[in-house]
Image 1 (cartoon, rainbow, N blue to C red):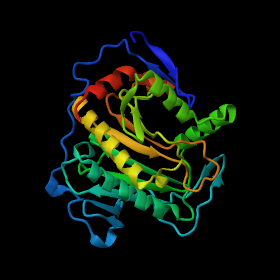
Image 2 (cartoon, rainbow, N blue to C red):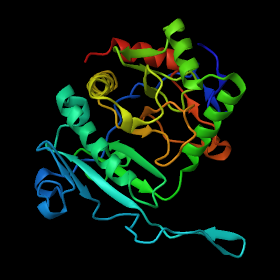
Image 3 (tube, rainbow, N blue to C red):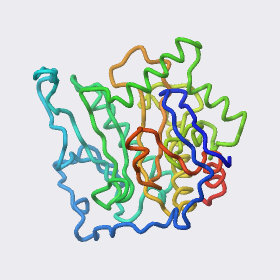
Image 4 (cartoon, rainbow, N blue to C red):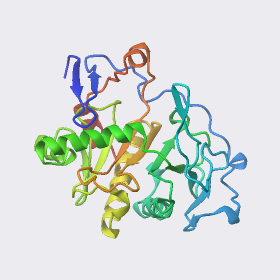
Length: 321
């Protein structure tokens, strides 16, 4: 692709602008990062055993010491204040901490990542039982430019009394597509990607990683189960190992092919208590941090992607694992 073009996301309906004709900066993957905190100053090196919610030796789950959400006994209700509405900021916020201070997921083995997934699943299923919880978001910030305030590798689990807007839009888009076409939109996307083969980054028997046709950032990668499934927490033991392996592969490719770029990832799954969402297809989204939004992005809400997904997939495919 040599010229810019707009592409429409099949699920959200959003338009993104691919500016593939722009020259990449020579230091596209080598921008200086803030210096990480030392191991001796790390709050995750010594944990309070009484606070640990889950432990496998390699992974510990603890409550966030500085939560933006607070546990509750009564479910919150929105109430009006003039033209506005507000609601108590209740919920649960937990931190999933891996053992090694300096070794991020891109450096881990499949077995180690599988243990991280065990922690995600165990805590997801427990928090799902909480009466007021409507959505559970699992996310990971890797590196200071991705918002990681503590250098020690860790993920977070937020149990919310609402379904976030981004998830709601994804569910709405998926539901509308199914209503109109009687097919899962994500399954149709994967069918197209397997046919074209231009945007596939990696695959194994149960999962496939693709650079989305309408990527929201350069080198965005999404990992989908090949078999249609709406709920992450229903993953089987064999599928979990396959998922751990493809996560390892993709993060290693980002590490080796993008000079260990910072990134965020999160898991989008059906809401915790939703019933009629069989049309949805759960997946992981990985968003490397390669640029900062400017006036066009902030003023219009239109993402500008400088590396087309076809090129991004080619670069990542050829990267070492």
